[in-house]
Amino acid sequence: MTLTERIQIFFGKSGSGSKDAAKNRLLLVLQDDRLGLTGEKKEALRKDILAAIRKHLDIDAEGFTMEFMSSATDQKEMRVTAPVQLGRGAVNLSK
Amino acid sequence: MSGRAIVVTSGKGGVGKTTATANIGLSLASRGQKVVLIDGDIGLRNLDLILGVENRVVYNIVDVVSGRCQPRQALVKDKRISSLFLIPASQIDQKEAINADQMRDLSTQLKEEFDFVLIDCPAGIEQGFRNAVAAADEAIVVTTPDVSPVRDADRVIGLLQGSLGEPQLIINRMSMAMVKRGDMLDQQDVLDILAIRLLGIVPEDEAVVIAGNKGAPVVLNGGSPSGDAYGRIARRILGEDVPIPELNGHSSFAKRLGQFIFGR
Ligand SMILES: Nc1ncnc2c1ncn2[C@@H]1O[C@H](COP(=O)(O)OP(=O)(O)O)[C@@H](O)[C@H]1O
Ligand SMILES: [Mg+2]
Image 1 (tube, each protein chain N blue to C red):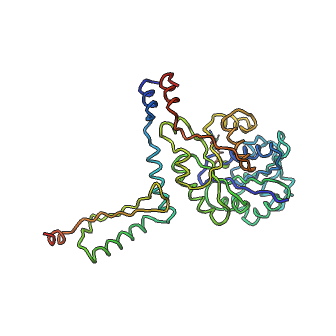
Image 2: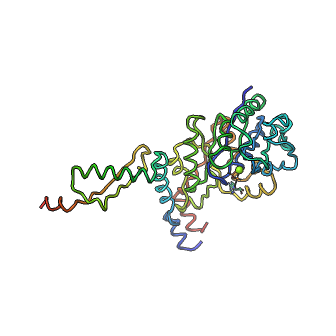
Image 3: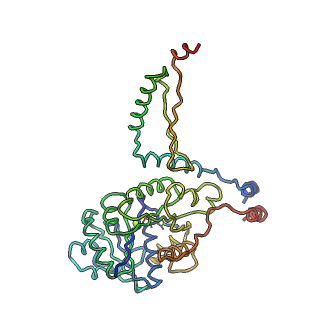
């Protein structure tokens, strides 16, 4: 064992810590698996949500993305985030 | 008498189902239980080889369900532990050579005579899986702490819901060195993800490969970490309260200090 390795182990920090990536990716993909949330369904949901928002707000349709995130602490909780880019009209209105 | 029929399954292949079935079966039998193992992997027969009884196979499970022989004619008796028997898979047939009802009937019949019927499930979630599950009342899910097997285990757990009681989990091939480095999911991570009961953890162990070479599963030779782990698993199946050794790799300050100073 090299000195660096020993120091790393001493501080509890060797390796690349790749298991965190494994855990996060698994929690995400399993949420989709369990819900039967396919890429196709996600796209349909994205379009519906976009249309619903656009009925009330002028937002930029191009960059509208949705992110599905599972909570690492509560398997029953899912977060859907969709950052909204305000459209030209909205920006002009607010001026 | 009505014994317990337990399927050992995983979704993903190569995670250690056959090894687990052989070792749990031998271990239960060595504790005085009458045990029959069914190799459910039709077309890919392996359990006979792992058990080291391949030279004494005459009939197989397809012969039994198609009436070409009586169940007792197909039973291969273990020479080391007299209360252990195997019904081998057929090597030349397809999974479709048997259906779920036939498997259920066979298992019902065997449960009359045996304390345990352990079914080694093939990989996948198709006919072979459905057959193996149909024969069982309980399930053990085997996974390794890698992303694909864990994902597949989750799928299998979902499929088992409803048909069988809550499955129990074996995490196989755990490497303490990798867990310590933070490069392998530890037991808590896997349990957080799969949210089922843990039956046991089996370490990565060269002895398993050697045992496979010889046809003498690890529980037969005391002293290997994997053999000990399977022994504890068998005792838990029998209802004993055997603690699961803490294998999550969070080493103490003193241990880390020792590693720092002595380099091991
Ligand atoms: N705990 C372990 N340590 C090291 N190797 C193992 C362990 N468990 C299983 N293996 C190896 O993994 C391979 C697959 O095991 P097997 O029991 O045949 O899996 P499955 O029945 O799920 O396909 C075998 O070569 C076996 O020797
Ligand atoms: Mg197998």
